[in-house]
Amino acid sequence: MNSFKFYRLPAGSEVIGDLLTHYAEDALEEDILQVRLPQGEVIDVGWHPAYDRENGSFLVTAYKGDWENQIAQYRVKTEFEVFETVQKVAAQLLQRLAPLRQQKTHEMNISWQSLGGSRRVTNYEVTA
Image (tube, rainbow, N blue to C red; front, side, top):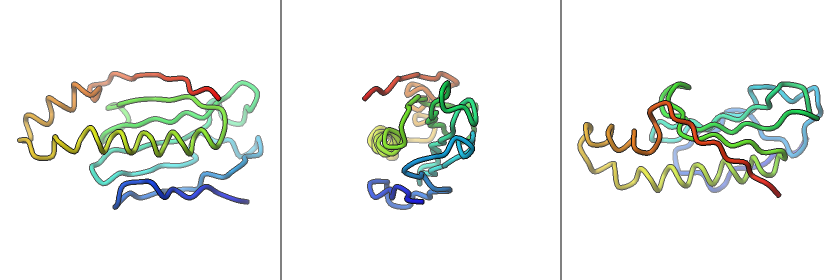
């Protein structure tokens, strides 16, 4: 099976799992891929509902620290859309947090919450 290679992720990112170029229905699981970014954010990819190609979609969720601190969530239908979405989300998180790294911890926590880190999820639909 062929898989996508993530070349545009920030240095120090860790990719756990493989994003295949095509999934058979019996391989569409809730836990497909996880990307851990160097600043502590995680981009999680799964198929929901599992094993149901007709009614399901890939769910790409970005969170900070743990699942309860979700930043954004995207629903996409194709493997290529997952590939593009993961790379775009990683780049956006890196850009948003770059100026915050030089601030005090207390200010960073307040700023992080303003980015959606306090249990607010933003849903987007990516269409072809």
